[in-house]
Length: 507
Image (tube, rainbow, N blue to C red; front, side, top):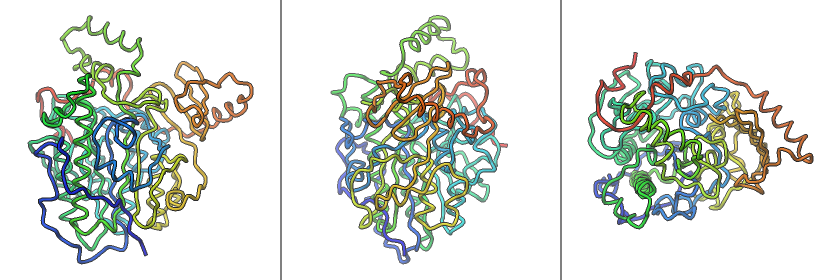
């Protein structure tokens, strides 16, 4: 019989820095389940571009009391690895497979007609097969131009949120088109002109899903927040709490993270009020490292400055300069002490905060062995005792490790980046730049990746073994558009609505 799997936690007040219009489950009437499903509810909460040092429990100056309380009561994953960008991580999460194998090694731009390969079975499909009701609120970013790529064609009963990789927080625009809609598995699709801050709306919908669920069926809720992804924007009340932070980028970023924290608290409150707390799993994670100014090389800044002087305000092609300015100069994340950040195959791009909890079954503490994003699906299938725990996954069922510390075999983790490729066989990590340069680190002893052992004779055989295994890793047909097309159809966030909504482009 399945035991309670969740994070014990409830704060009876909202933090002073939270926005007044943040939706709160406290206002909802208490409804107790009349039937408890035999399988646990599963809630995955994903932050977008949240850095290693951007939560209170990690030592950050950012106020995150709700998330901190969850982490303190749960199993904190100190070596949790993802891919360095949004799409690759989300593809691995839902399939249990390497993003390299899937051909999804870059963030998908919104003009890409393809998506997560249709032959891949994904998490909600596995879970629906054993009786789960499934819902996605927030960000998809795995393709939508053909109806078969939509989340409601991939096992989700309902979807509410944005299909593209990022939006304006208040106007819900992406590259000049509106991107906020509601879909269901019956084929209904509607552009929703909901007003409000995106983080609030996603939390509000998550609470609604919890309250309106079928009480005799287990719930799988995938809450994929846009925060704290660029653009830097937050309610004035929350921004005011960070007046002491000098950098305007860091100040806004901190406020966005605090809004995310309040949203997580609302979801937990709703679970408790609906009598679900004792039968629910929550897994919290970031999809990649934080976007930060500090890792941007002098060369990158020089390129931006040259183009800025060359193009000026002409926005050729399609707001290229705004996009480059955002990704190079305005990031507010902090990945200290890890090297670099989002888009990088160094630790700052791929080692991120993550935790989970199971009351009465999992002791609160820290897990210092590696767990990766591609382990999540096989681990969940192991938890529910599915017969499909070995469905060609690159990840492994790490549930025994998470439950009682039984190590098991940790699969290699292959990283794909615009900078090159890397392979982690803990504690060793080999990186091969597109230039052909090789780096080799012991990331247990050198987490900041400062001592390159690539030329060490002592480590030469191991380095070559890892490189050979990296070469041998399967590479799927690329889903991403060629570089020149990605450069022309640049994705940017917010700005003005100049064309029909993205949903209207679905065929």
